[in-house]
Length: 142
Image (cartoon, rainbow, N blue to C red; front, side, top):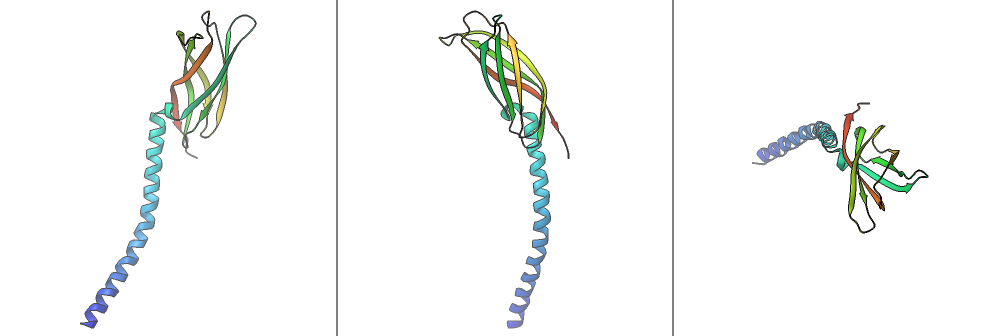
């Protein structure tokens, strides 16, 4: 009886050693799959990973100058040719006009790029809201 118990414990110990080797390779495979999944998520939804900060002013000839930066919060994807949606609002919050402008820059992961747009906004424009419409995503392998 003691020999049988000893054999079962020995067999369980050997079996557990083999599983540790499999766990290490499983972690690497799991990491690669997670990385690929993250890359696809970033590629398919650039609006979730691009953040726009902007401010506006009027210049001498009456154009509205919108300056700002676009930050890439993704970890794998580069974004380029970013389309921005500009909404022009009055002091009371009424939307006066809309426009689409494209920023032709490449933004690597974790970086930001500045932009400057000049636009003849409608009379009575008090503020401009800027949001990302779409962008072209690229996954650059090191």
